[in-house]
Image 1 (cartoon, helix red, strand yellow):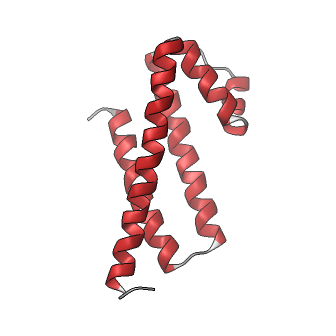
Image 2 (cartoon, helix red, strand yellow):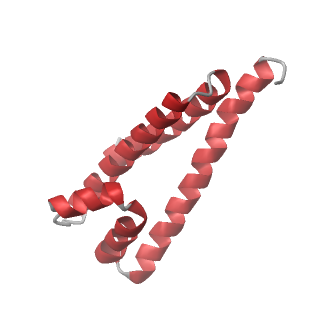
Image 3 (spheres, helix red, strand yellow):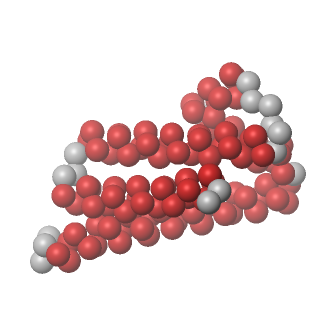
Length: 118
């Protein structure tokens, strides 16, 4: 299985577990832990993609990707794919985020249903 597919599945599994954890123990450390893990998977995915597109990353790009994701990531997509494919990639990412939240809600809903409601 390709590494990007593994990261996709791992992200969805993480979303499900996050939904479960947030119902069982809604704590701040858990939120920050999952945010950090998701950022790690996201950056790992970008690095794999950059290697496929022969995009030369430098330290400034890596730091900007972490600190200014909402600016750096669209720049990266348009730089490597062009305007149309970059926009399509952004749409795919938005759809993935929606899917992530749906899977997270499914995990939370299963816990609520097994506990007889909250």
